[in-house]
Length: 434
Ligand code: UD1
Image 1 (cartoon, rainbow, N blue to C red):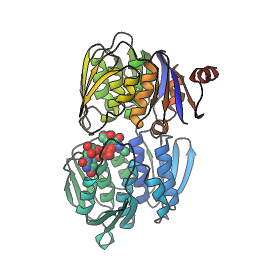
Image 2 (tube, protein in one colour):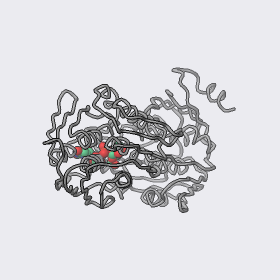
Image 3 (cartoon, helix red, strand yellow):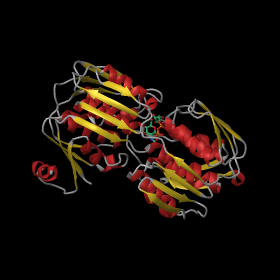
Image 4 (cartoon, rainbow, N blue to C red):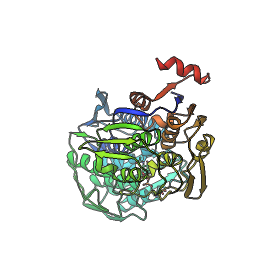
């Protein structure tokens, strides 16, 4: 789809089901390349990033069989290099996990530099440091990455990450799985999807311990075997619906979540006057009164997730008083602020700090999704705003949100997706409303 058209001002009510975690899926699909057998992956989100990764494996000879909408069988018994994957690997960030999985499987890797959302410079020096420590030679040039393990197999090593990096932790864990001997990753990232990847690898015969702490130990094994694995629910998708109801008002039940993963988001929303009740695998989120200002700093897990920063800042733009948001992970993650200003938000950005003066309301406007989470923020802004908002470039949103339009419509939102390049928003909304 090209754009979403949202008529704002409707409170949200009802229930929404959260899909499998994008960032777990995009690590686990490349990791499946190392399994000589069938990996059944359940609770797979239906999003374009996972589709592309499955296409990459298929181009490499994997048999990819969709069992149902959210379950896929991936059989990587007979796989080989195929440079045709380069067109796809350039598009997505997580394609760099193929470095680890190809090195594990083939003792060599050939892929491109990764694509993905542009939050400023996104270096991969820690990935390279890790692969080198495991005994790989790394050649990078002309947008291509070529790696080779000495004697055809990586060797376990002790690796201290200079920066807490989700991607480097994942890549090194994957590469170390089939290496000879033990690998110790220190200053590792602790995000829920790191634990999910470790659980996936272990259920296929790997020996990974300590995931979820900052020291992960991987004892290399000779091979991995077939198995079935169910992905965890998406923490950020759940957080996005929490932010949506916080902004628009109403009461929704968000099903298929791990409430513990949402603690940091729930705590901040509670400070803002949002009522949250936790069940075993659901949260109920209610917002009736005024929103209060607060301060937020994004940090690696268990800190407040940077991937929720645009959505929560959008809600704060409607809170009484002044809020200060500090981006602690990325250098340049406020590009969406220009779009929010078009809707009447009052936000000043200075480097990593955004000062938000709450306004009583936002006004619908044509805006663009600058990246995945910025796009989600625009959708939330549209739900909260008076009048009609047209969000362009929604392919960014569809990289990571399964059926966001259908799920929001299920909560009573007036949102439609259209592929016509132009057209009067009022008319299109009226046509779809039936
Ligand atoms: C992952 C997530 C992304 C999220 C980010 C931080 C996936 C597919 N994407 O991205 O949605 O915003 O974690 O939670 O899981 N860094 C280096 N050198 C490196 C690697 C990273 O300096 O080699 C820096 C980055 O510039 C950034 C910080 O470390 O400032 C964190 O990056 P990292 O955790 O690696 O993010 P990604 O894995 O790319």
